[in-house]
Image (cartoon, rainbow, N blue to C red; front, side, top):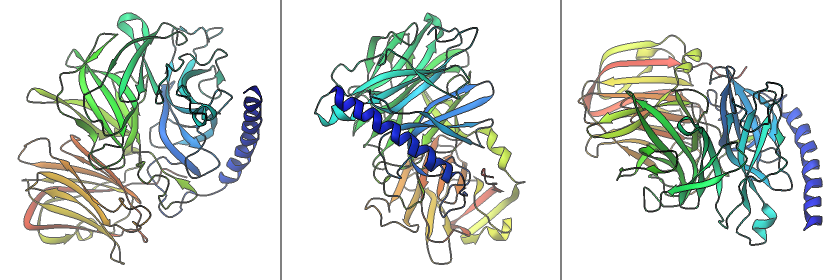
Length: 510
């Protein structure tokens, strides 16, 4: 075993040198490839999946992420790194955390240890501490069940470099094949750290005074919510609900989402520092579309809760037709509570910082649509990416058609009979790389207001729909052979749009 570990360390060092060389070459390339997201974060090259270690410190948003730096398909995981001052423009940085003899670096979180509970800080330095799963590939191949363990690293230079804790792992696997994705927060009432950890079909909660020594407190989830697949990437967060503290547990799972494959559900409840409880009986989804997964929130943002997801689906993430990168992140979203009757739901809206890349809006009011209307006649030349906000006077069937001159089209709309929003990509362009990609996806309308509000963020290869002030959300990626350059609104029975707002979005890349 010692010989195997030594060979692994040598291989990892060689791969680090290769990665550094490859990244230097990639940095010379532009960001204008076909299907390259222009207002979403994506790596310049190679594979990306879960957002990790998201922490806000000294005016900087840190985004770490699952990254395979030498292939465009999933493989040995590293923590990639990017930073932003506004959640919109991102600076890519060198790989933050590399695999070692304990294992590759799976998903996790990061915190600001402002009280230096860990003791890592010296001479008044405030340490940032990353908590992550290490995945022992050798152990997995050998058939053991304890190949996923939790480790920590710390940074004393505001996240620029990271030092692994000498006594890793800090939580050893009790014998579960799925034991991963630690999300840590500070629980002020009891002056301790609390970790939410995925354990196969449920979430386990641990606590620690110092981020090094952990005890198990409780678990939640068996027989609750959706269980079509394993639970992953949990996140326990507190909201201020008019002076009352409400707790929300976000849980990702794959498969088992409402439109197939990967998805993100949530539970509203209470937490006493040891146990999370919820009276919620139904299953609620943060995003009903097929392409929002593994999402968590930034830590150290105060009352503001900012969420980011991976904009793909494990059904086809390894096959999507992009090069030299594969996959991207959603738009950062602010989460809030909304009361409907006796229930409490979570709403998601694009962060307000998106205004930094917005051109002046073109607004049309009291627009009557009978059968079909090209909105270019009202907005002028259409350019993507863009944002479109639509307020309808009454709930009616309608379809917004994004299309190009070769007949490819993406359909977005509302079906009044079914009381559902939908995104249909069956004729959207490249669809044959995976059998389930071409489909019509639906989401319920959760409120019965007489009027309807829809906001869309449309990039060159994705759309994010925020309906009814973010109560129903859908995210979908697509890959037209030629860029879409037309938008029509169709309504067989006619619809009155009180206000249509078209906003061109500037690319976030220089």
